[in-house]
Length: 80
Image (cartoon, rainbow, N blue to C red; front, top):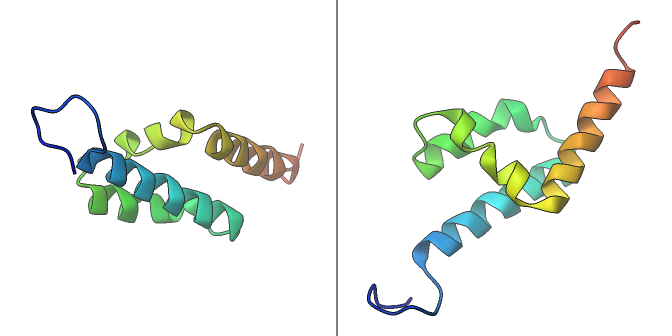
């Protein structure tokens, strides 16, 4: 990890972000109920509001695409 005074190199926060994104990707790929599991991830990351964890969905194009695909699929199953 880099020294706080250094301007280049990995930061602890970078690993935290990677963990969150990889976890969300895995959940979507496995077809798990991400909305149900998101509060657990938020708690693990130390987020007071679950909505703070939703940021990871919009920060990563693949996650955003998977979430949109799931939303579209679920919307098609609703009665007209």
